[in-house]
Image 1 (tube, rainbow, N blue to C red):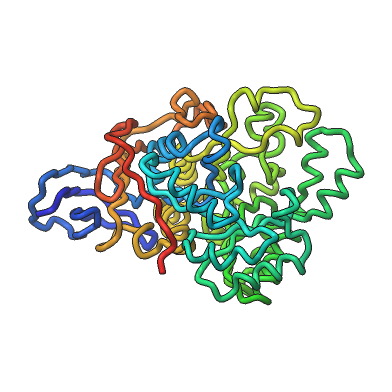
Image 2 (cartoon, rainbow, N blue to C red):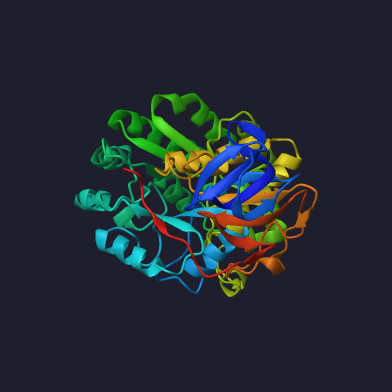
Length: 443
């Protein structure tokens, strides 16, 4: 007998769709069969609905520890659960940055009993490369390497710096995330333009800086035989560089929903709410990014969920670049991706591929997360296409208290979310206490 049987849904995996019943036992998917007689303690009729694997957000800042006035493990994973993100991969830029084995074990302990979805932790590569072996022993889902715009102790500004760091991780069973940038362009722009305007901010983080950062990361990864993941790209020049060079290394790439919908012109109306890095680009860049997404050149869509308090965003700053960078996104990843499905830019299997299967596989969780298959964690979403939903700032549970997608309507509604077979969200509300676990890279 199954614990739960979900009947009649159209199951969506990256490979395609098909009508099936799904049985759940011991937190795992135990049966996928169309119309097969089976008994269960709980039977859910999902006729007319889609059944998706839970989303895996590969790029989020939960702000815990040290920055919990902005967000913490509880509030951030609450937002994730309501948005159908059942696994959050948390970036290492809290206070302190997750740079040592002690920082990583402390962070794991802080999360215990407080997370509503599963969380994988990422470690940062610091200039002290001797820390790498002991960090690897703790099996973080990935390491993060920064090439611009970070404190000196974490900055790998030159090609030689990047190559040496990647060599220290080459051969290890891990993934290295690289945020593409160019510190020389950042510094040069600051010397030339002191105006503090939006234009100055855009110039300091130009498509040239992004493209050069991508090229250096790929060349260094090829030289070191390291596995890398290029963080959010959003310019035509960046996309072109990626498409020409991606085959030389074991590499994947991501973008974010905001980069697919907003342009730099939107700073005039939304200003601080949209300020993040990389900056938003021109309509031409957005068109190029959307074309790349539709063509399958983008491996992963993640959120870069990076909340700040409303007061921090609303304060007065001397320069646009000084506004705290980042915005919430965990609760809106699914509806914004569904918006792209509504526009017929992608199909539901593409959504699953970029937001579930690929991030799970790339970040070392691919034998338990990211697809609906026998033996996988029963992280499941029931999506009703007969209903619609409207994204609203008033409904956001992140401490940021807003969403740049306020008022947008999507032609489907998330009705139920399951984490390892247990229902955690029903009709937009949490069900039961926090049940998430810290997940580590598969050995």
